[in-house]
Length: 349
Image 1 (cartoon, rainbow, N blue to C red):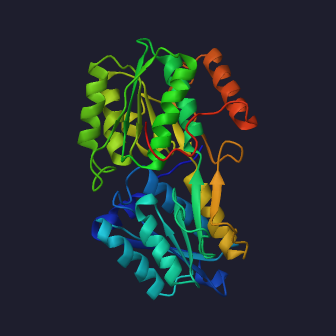
Image 2: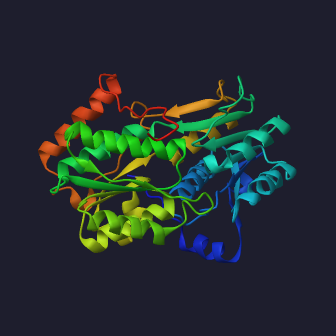
């Protein structure tokens, strides 16, 4: 299990400042590798994407063999992305890690302008150029695979033949979450009703828990009895609605049992993207001069890049038969005999 917790001391610091740092003891390294982490507008403390990315950077800094010195800068609005990235470049950082696809254009532009700095971004890549800059690597996840599994789980647990989903912005990664979830539910039960809604606005699509809660309440009132939420803090609002209604809920990105304990009673599992593992992996590659070619590193069920979190309080409520069916689905996805029908989707239809 992966605990994605922000220490109280760090949380306190976040109230006072939009940056922070960590690194090895000065005496342990003759030379440090400086890594800067830029959040999206969800900021640290989002109990999801940003926290998981920063956790990966912190894990690299805690590994004494890497000699990493790390610092984060928080983005309060989209116009902060480029200045935050540039600040690390100006301070002669060796590598910049961007938290998510919202920073895609800014990160790629900076990579092209600064060939001696390594750049990586979670959930995005160079989708426009024939060849990505050699100093740029996107970290991509087959989130449709984990979503397919939790969709199947939701269908297996539903008593009303009706499940729901609340999502962030209508962008490729979230589209794959939604479509994977819906296809997984229908794989189990072709007649099941699956509700779903994207947040309509870009600016706060992943930071609007009130909207997320209201949409989940709409779905619950309409008969859905399991809620999947994939949308940062917006999704957290949906989880809270399920908890207050006494219905099962399913989290996303990280094991939300640890990052959002308020909803532990309803949280069956989470569709995890092992973001912290991916981020530490690419930093390790950079430090050891093993930077990948091709501009992309992909993480999936086969390499433990995605998966299901433990069932925690629901372990005894998820039957052995359901667990066996999910294991069978996982095996078939891994060996290629079962398709999620959502891999690589960029638009929802």
